[in-house]
Image (cartoon, rainbow, N blue to C red; front, top):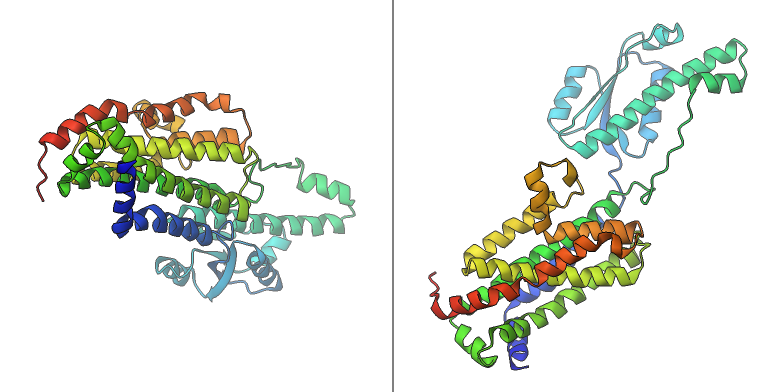
Length: 382
């Protein structure tokens, strides 16, 4: 109990703990969820190069401007001007209507409508490509429909000709195609675990830096296991409160999908925080140096964003990287969330990842003797 009181006083006396354990995680949560509050990018600027200037091309311009993701912000006389605008980041793409396009369209001579888009931003490029291609398809279908109506075809015959195969698409789990729900549910826990990594290593390293390790161990009666447990308990409590507050905001206030139920979220938050703390202690035990341990924890936390598998699937990575992914707590968090909370599979279906988090959380048991030895022999040098 004395060690717990001592650690609470340390947390209250040093603002860096409150900033990194409470302020920054809450800021990150509000930042990411507000950054993508529209669900996906909307009204991305595009340009038009209309060398035909007919009622048909003006109608097509209004059509693409009405799409959710695109907004026509400028008209250019040549493709060269529009290309320079893309290079200046003024627009993300443009549509080129060539001269005599409408005349060739009505004569069924397949005019070429060109679309140019920047894929430097993958999300913006993909969305604009989809909408500009849809506009071209609709334009072609409209001409075909008018021609067939003039020839006396029925609406059923026209539909069967223009769309011989009907597409019945079902977007499972995220029908809104919301990037906020898809990305924030991974980015926010990733940042939270990164802060846990860093502050766990920092709290242990500062004992050596300020020469208080003897007092800390002595307060725990010389038992390093008891000393570490009592030291980390206040941190665990604060992390859990913040983690659950972020979850309540995402899955409660913002209605992110979590059909698996709240108790699974609570369990996932608990084992993830414990695993992150265990990993931080493990790294400090391997490298009992404040600067090096925090550097490794920082590197591991940043690599977690790639190894989690949400952007690039882990099964498509090289075999060594697939094996390495088991050492990242965020990877297990993501799999458990995806399987058991998002898709409502039983927790038993993710037992390997639950066990992996439990093993990572228990790693400090292996490192405790080494940490005690480091505290007795290591001299901090600035």
